[in-house]
Image 1 (tube, helix red, strand yellow):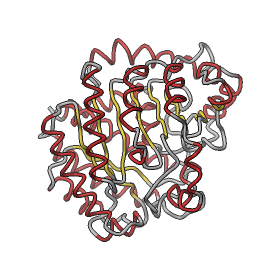
Image 2 (cartoon, helix red, strand yellow):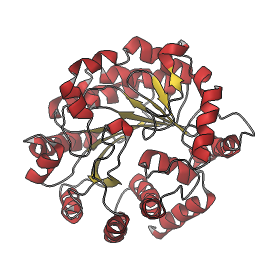
Image 3 (cartoon, rainbow, N blue to C red):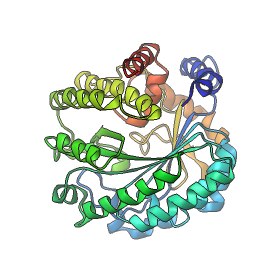
Length: 380
């Protein structure tokens, strides 16, 4: 996000979102759209049950939105700033580049991001190259990032992800994507870790590995119990004290390594440093530490057309289903049901450290944004 975009595009919406949260105005279109493109997943992670659900019922993927349906939905939504792709495993959709093409045509995002379990290195590479070619046709000014998951080193990664040989595939994927990064300045390789009870003591080793392979952008997120993951009740989340102590050391390493990074990496690291502090407080205080704008600044569309305020309470509190509303996003976005769910969130009936939403919440919170700016200045 550059300064011009922030003041001409993001800032006016942030004002609207703060007013809309109090029902003084109708909420504008969200700046962030997350789209779970498929129910399919070829991992069997200890922290997530999506892969297990797919293994038990492979026919679930027949409910995935088709390209024709996706085109109707994207046309209805219009411009968003951040387009996050999710799954299942996004690259199991062979038409992944076609989805990117529809996003470029109708959503016109400035940033496209997708995670991957890295089990299909060659397909990921090919899809990335085809997607970049699509982006180039639309002006080439869209930033595109892919984030393979790394939850351990070697066999530990395979154990947590549930697939033997996954780490070897991850290393192949990293090398293939690093080559793409050399020739495409708008492409960014990231790595990400889900911090759980299974790898709480391995974060230093993981981060050292990330830097050893020359990847500049690395993030972690706390393992959560989410309806989206079919893992409610699974004891996967570290305690608040464990996470707080872990992040204290992790942040020191971020600060030490950030000054040598590119400008975009420095900006995102400043935001993440504030996020890590926020997560520690949320886990400790068990409440919304700052106001949550889920269902206002952000929206999540599930693979079957369900519209969620976020993926944490999505199945329990959907805003509606696009297949049932003739693919009319506004009909759902401005519905009475959507207003009721926004009030549910505003009244702090839920809380979570969901990274995607937390970043938007930080942008909407003056004190948090000041902290981000001060951290950015400290990197100069």
